[in-house]
Length: 138
Image (cartoon, rainbow, N blue to C red; front, side, top):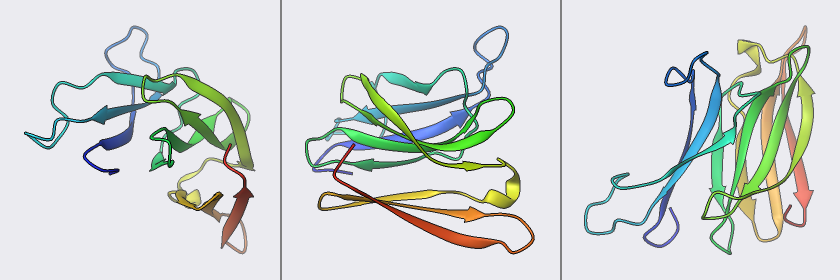
């Protein structure tokens, strides 16, 4: 939440489309009289490679960063992308490659000043939590 604006990102199997396509979607709500997501427009963050587990964070200018697990068929990646309030996508950045399995957990995102912090679980024989700092907003 930023001021009176809420933002949410979620994963859907895309059942409203035929054939169904997994997607990451997001929305903003500025309805301060009735807090919640009523009368909002839904945008697609990833229409082709949605793997799920999204997180969202506001930037100082009111745009948002969305982090999600993007499934590229043979490989998965943690993808970070900035979106404006009208749903326009900026260039995306793949933070790291991952196997995309359940053991990868739920990656998280935080914005502090001009830094973006991303955490995720690196699975394998010795699972561990990883942290990345991206200096300068994307």
